[in-house]
Image 1 (cartoon, rainbow, N blue to C red):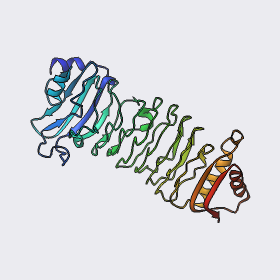
Image 2 (cartoon, rainbow, N blue to C red):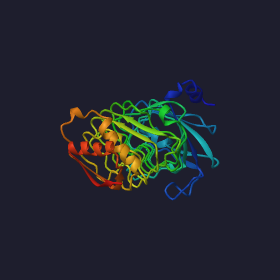
Image 3 (cartoon, rainbow, N blue to C red):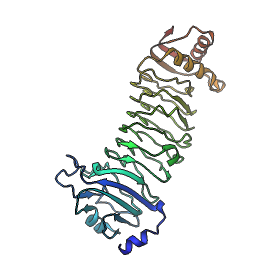
Image 4 (cartoon, helix red, strand yellow):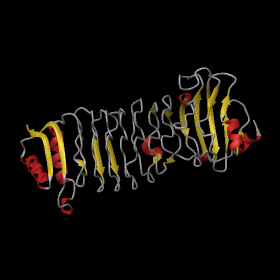
Length: 341
């Protein structure tokens, strides 16, 4: 064990970014000719911060990276045998990104598990995007940064509890954060997001487990949830509380029998293009109309300019439902392809 390894073993674990690779997972885009190497997805034409240390659990000494020269010399790791290895990055790693547009091909398909994101590890847009074999298995809480657009886009699996692992108090943009995760999601993100303005495609293409009975977003600055559940077959309770919400387009696109939207604050919504694209059950239509009328304070809204295409859905011949529809129409809402059962 080298000197660096002994020193960094004493570091607070929150300063460590830790992930596992399987060098045998070679594909056409990840050096298929070589299962004895792994190239760290760290931009080699940028060096910033105070430096970091690379630690690999194959017996080699820890490697300090303090400047561009050391980065270029050590960013590709070579192994005696193919297999699974743990990689730890200690310190300030500011230019790590698996989805760079530089044209450089990285071995991102060899990343199989992410277990820690250190405090000195700058989070960024699309950071782990394209790691199609990667399991998100964080074991320590992470405070997400302001812009985490597409951070885990197209990964394989989430095995940690998203609600308890992540703090989203600083996040402004969650667009595509979990877009197209391959395996079923058994948990969802925390409820309260005081700075969130966009959550487009948040769970698009995901399968949300039936064990998730509620998705709730309390975000006073949220303006749009477009494409939030595209192709996701989910039947739970959906709540969005945001007086800033203006766009709910394609919320349940390609979702058969979409759930009620009665707990989504639509008082200031103006853009509703294809908010559903299949027939909503009569019970859920009723719950939507009644909820829109009764769950929110309409005294602060003089009029609304919005059209909701209900895709040939039907509402019940129940006086309270009929009255709710008439009330919403009196506020300026237009309903199309919505008739009485």
